Structures are given as structure tokens and as C-alpha cells.
Length: 166
Image (cartoon, rainbow, N blue to C red; front, side, top):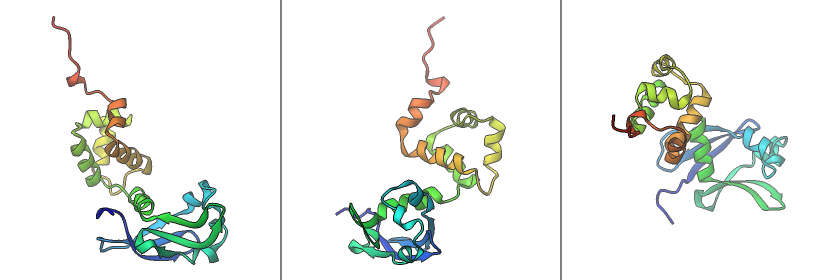
């Protein structure tokens, strides 16, 4: 078993569709809205309108997941800690400072970042000052950072293209 595997150390339902979760190695708890997961997954659909069952969330497998007291045709209704950690990461707001770190990590200038995201250079400069960027921008940035082939497929820096000798 790998040491860097996500583990849930605390889980508490909040309302009918959100969980407050603490992951191993983290001090703070995160609030995860699972409405999208329930609405878009046949597996989790039984929880969509069953607040009582949702309230039965509990940690399983030594923190490797969270399960609910519902049996499906696939077995017990559960979700892995790594999936919950990914949802938590994706739901975290992206700030201007986060955006600056993203741009630096990918080595993008303001103009290159603007081209990659399909916006103007001034918009990129505005993002750097924001407390919270639009969710779609955060989603795109995280996807581009996670998968370098995605960036390579959609952007070639002009200074890297060899030009024929004059």
C-alpha cells in the first residue's frame, strides 16, 4: 500500500448532499458538495432523495473510502477517499495567487496564458488580482496542470517553432 494514498480520517454529513471531510495529513476539514456526483451517477442516484441514508455516511476500509447503508446491484454504496480528495481539490476556489503559481509552474507568459485560455491579456492580468476566479477557469487550469499532454495538444509557443532560414 502506498503512503501517498488519500485517507479519510473524519466524515460528517451536512444537510442532504454535502460532507465535511478531513483527510490524513491535513489540519482543516473540507466541505464537499456531492450533488453533482449523485445527479450524474446511476451508482449514487439512490442518495439523491434519501437524506436519511445520506446521513449514514461512515468511514470504511481504514479510511480508504466512505460508505452509506445502501446496497446496490454493484454491492455496497461507497466512494474512494481518492475520489473524495479529487472532488475537494476541484471544488476549492482558485485565487489570483493560485493562478499566478499555475502560470509560473507551466512557464506561461501573460500572453501565452491568455492564448491557452482563449481570453485577452487584460483578462489574465485581472485574474491575478481576483479573490476567486470563475469556476470554469479553475477547472481548465487544473486540467492543464494535471495533464501536460493536454497543454501540448492545444498550445505551441511561438518561440519554439523553428523558422526557415531567410
